[in-house]
Amino acid sequence: MYFELTEEQKAIQSLACEFARNEIQPIAMSLDLASATENFPWELVKKGSKLGFRTLTLPPRWGGIGADAITQLAIIDELAYVDASCSKIFAKNWTACRYLIAGGTEEQKERFLPLIRDNDTYLLATPGTEPGAGADKDTEYYDAPPGEGVMTTARREGNHYVVNGRKHFIAHGPTASLFIMRVRTDPSAPMSKGVSYLLIPRDTPGVSIGAIHDKLGWRAYPQSEIVLEDVVVPAANLLGGKEGYLNPEVGRGGRSIEVPAHMMAVARAALDAAIAYAGMRRQGGKIIIQHQSVAQDLADCYTLLEAGRSLLWRAAWTDTYQGVNPALTRVCRIYCAETSIKICITALQVFGGYGVMREMPIQKYLRDAITMEHGESTTRVVKLALAKLMESRFKAGTLC
Image (cartoon, rainbow, N blue to C red; front, side, top):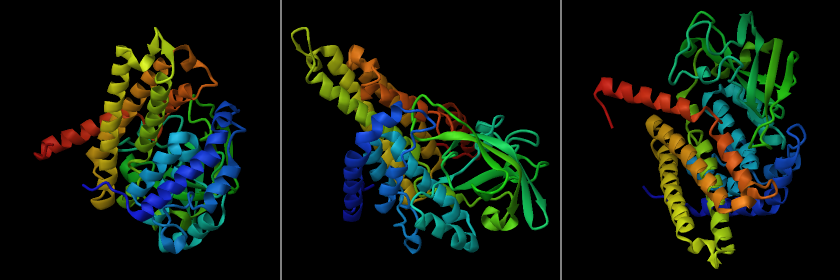
């Protein structure tokens, strides 16, 4: 495996670093402290759009560069190092675009991709979670039977669907222009057969935004409820033109490493802050990095960070050159989540009493790390999915 970036990737990484320091860093703390209903950085989105960050994964034909997982990782590593919320605003669009790029019909691409390309505030959401369907919205570890899982219904009537239901915890719920909505098209079938995806523009009659969730961390990256009441959607908006099907290629192109990449960037930022503080703070007649307990804690954190980053880059390389490895993807998600929280807790402790003060960034890193563990599924559910995969491999006689 060769992890060296190309010259083009290095140039984009440098651009992301400059953007993060000049545009994100000055507003990151104020966004974190502001109300969840008033802290979305629209001007930042416009500035990032001009640099191509919002449309990074679109194919060149549609105005992007078709960025692979390695390129996305390099950019997230810079943006999320400064602020995970602002980074995720852009990164969510990259992975959501994959639904159309890999799973949409040519007609759907012709209709929607120019809208994404040409409108510098056009964001995407992929509503799946519901009040009664958290982990059950996916079939990776549990294929929910009829009456369980996704209950938002899409009833076919002639050349359109009528959609009813409620989604919640939906990223970009309050801000997206297009919802790539997970719906139950066949209530009599299990989730793996009965769930489809509909392309629902935000301004469709019957679509409304419910509560905007007030989170512990990731505060400028909004989640909300979406309410659907007799929403009429053309059958031409059925993603891929098929019920009960999603092209597995949707999972490639960075989707598998997006959340772990944010976790490791936050952990790196927290550890760097702790090392810098330990190198200037004096207690007991010397700087605290010279105290054995602090030195050992920092060494342990650096070891965890390097292991996590190596695993992350391996997963990105595998995605780019070989396709998604489901086991590796889950291992990466689990390890990076747990490692990020451990590092952020230890880093905060190095700061002592200053660590828990809201005006200090170190406590924000911990809140973001804890919140991210519950983003795009949870660590507990990912472990269950990994165990199920291990069981299937055992039955097939193909272990590690």
